[in-house]
Image (cartoon, rainbow, N blue to C red; front, side, top):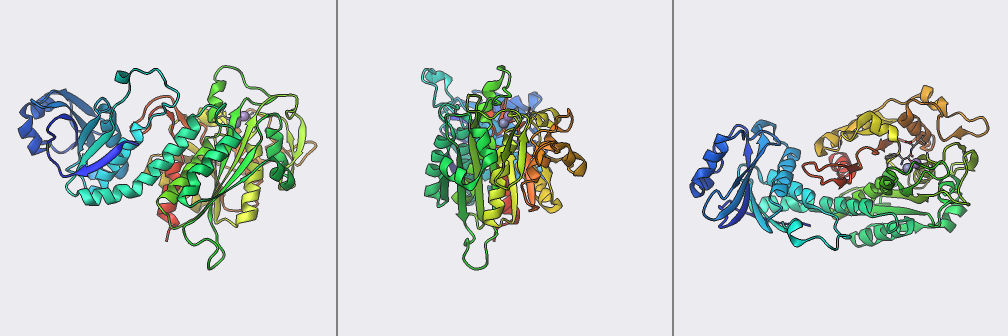
Length: 491
Ligand code: BES
Ligand code: MN
Ligand code: ZN
């Protein structure tokens, strides 16, 4: 992780600097104007106005500084932690060529200075475990960033609360980035356990034998074609005392963890199939969210459950038309083996509500291609049976930039799942509303409990850099769930 230090504003003696500028402020930073008199002129001469997302690079503005990057914050009155993060992310990206750089956040509160640090850290993450031949000059060098602020101690205290969330995000990004030959159900469970146990999370891993004994027929039908055995990981963080005192009602997060989705016998086309290594991003986000909550010692009882399987075609694979009996007892006619995520969630959700008496359940899943058609990569789809929970989730989405758009549900969609020979089929068979009918299917396994489903198919992985997320695994959901808890369910 990019190292962050906070210091009082002083123009650096050398190297690279970023200054964050609000739209309404004409002057930058008097001390810098003095040290580099040409800078203000250079900025004023161009189109740089301090607008949101605007930036301007000035090379060698003084005898000693190698570069200054001005980054716009937009109007001072509209400034939010999220906008400060975005500016921090842009600054870090512009300063990546220097090993040590500084960013001037002197005009901001210490809390916003911590958000600048968060943005810089999030943007600077990189997955380079498998790059053995990259030339040093091609690698980003930024290793340490000094954030210049009027109250370094206060900013540092605020940053200490954000840092564990960044660590949770990085855990998720790493899991989602790993190829499927390295990350399969058993190895993913091992990694979750290794990362979470030291944070004080109780981690339990159930294997094929236990899941068979429990009767996870829906999830095991998906997994039976693979040589890699399934796992379910159950993670408990008892930050509010757990079962001590009154009966615990934990918040509950459930993730789809298909470590690779070939489609099974209903096999996917070859083009783009490699993307399906990230079909475990829902599970990855749940694991990262548990790390974030435990890492910052959140005062909440939380339980995370992930169903980990690999969906493969083989001589032992499930066939279209097979009927399986889910853990809930309901039977499912599997008409398309590529609609497998819902089959995994069905058993894990039923287990979650039965075992933990949750206050609510939220599942995250890269569930449907139709979600990408509907929302692209700007919003994730939200489906919920509870308006209050939906409202809280939407608010957390706006706060963190992990935005949600709610879709309708109802009887008329639900009946599209009617099967001729079993309690339900796993696809509607029609052309429309694919994301909604998937949500309806999942709802049948919530036993009427308060529940929301987030279809993150379009947002789990990005094809281009954004202000705080380099292209690739986004870890969408980690910040969202952490903020949901922080805003509504602590202390
Ligand atoms: N994992 C996919 C959904 C997906 C597709 C996520 C593309 C991200 C990018 C899911 O298991 C799937 O295959 N869904 C099918 C459902 C269909 C068979 C009803 C789909 O969306 O095509
Ligand atoms: Mn599939
Ligand atoms: Zn899938």
